[in-house]
Length: 140
Image 1: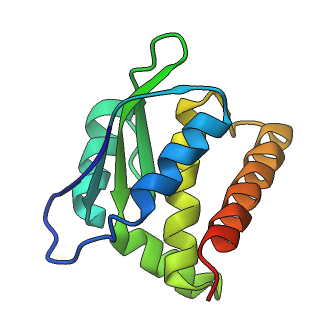
Image 2 (image 1 turned 45 degrees about the vertical axis):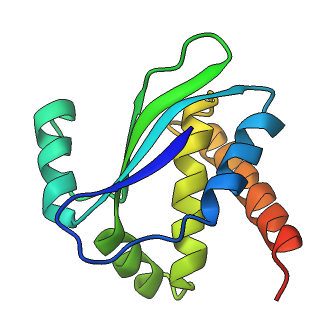
């Protein structure tokens, strides 16, 4: 089951994305476990980054992997503030950038990495694939 939670935010994210995210998991040949998206602001996610990863910088997403075998479980922290800033900086649509980041977290749990240039290319390819599937399923 995929659930959405909010920390330090007034805004919310459409729950319409849950089925699409579940479809990504199933398309990857995995089972759906317990997945929690925690939407927050920059400061909340910076504190997570500092406390748990010893990184002192802003990021749009941090994924904690609780995967067991083929069952995908985890906590995915997402800064909506950072997504908005990134969408503006990259001249992208906010919703498109949000979907990319949501898929990115699931893909990490499915086993995709993005530490090397080659891994990053594969991650982007998979994000693009699933974004296209979302558009195909939700035209207009």
